Amino acid sequence: MPRNRPGPDNYFYLLLGLVVWIWYRIWVVGSSGPEHFFLNLRLSSNGLEGFEPLGTVGRFYPLIFALFTFEHIYTHKRNRHLRIICWIWMMSYAIATMGKFAVLTPILAWSIIKGLQGRIRMGRIAAIVCGTFVLMLVVHFIRKGEQDEAGFLDVLATYVYSPIVALGYVKPVVSEYTAPYVFRFFYAMGNFFGLSPAPIDVISDYVYIPFPTNVYTVMQPFLHDFSLIGVAVGALFYAFLFCILFWLAVMNKGYYLGLYAMISICLVGQFFAETLLMMLSQHIQEAIMLAFIFIVSRRRFDVG
Image (tube, rainbow, N blue to C red; front, side, top):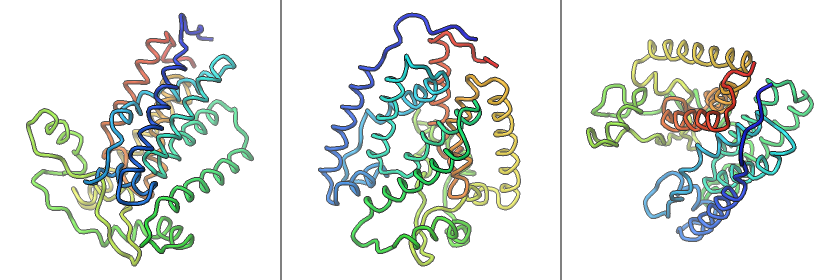
């Protein structure tokens, strides 16, 4: 067994301070916009003008998600308070952004870690799925605007049936870049260093089928940039990457288990949108933060 982490590792009060900070920002952002409280939070997370941004506290997400993952890989009575405060911050971030995926991501990561460690029962998985589904619906309905008249069945149909249909209605985006979606990360880096204009927006435009939706499945960027050949190559890329990561996670149950758990949201989200390449910067930050935590804690990357 890997040795225990040496030295002081209690960052509880630091995370407690970050929880208080994000709660303060939630109040500021939710109270300052022209819409109702929760819609202000959602529109702010979309980066719309006229809405107060969440601010610097949101940039701690990769670090805290990495801490969340690490502490649940090495569960012990001594780190229970750390796991609890990580859960509180992650759920606070979900409220701050009013994002359904922000609710799903930590729950999915936790489930995968416990599942691959053999510490979760099938009956509990069913309860987790139902509970998560209800939470995501709650987030959707409390954030919607007054003009949104879609009911429960309409919302369910939109996410179950509409993505592949909406893909046929979305208009190709005219861009000065070659493959603006697939290579968005590199264009974003160029923009950061002042070498190129801003990259394409990660939030797609809405189409009406007849209800408005902007979820187009994982195929959308590959289809837009490289037509059907891009879809085939993208599928092979996804299959190769996640098969390798899954094998490493099962064999080693250390760093690679955490990494697989952190980006597994891309597998679940593929039915709605492409989130691996379009949010590659965030995933790289999470991978670096997790590696840093392993190094600082002196845990072996391979503990299989």
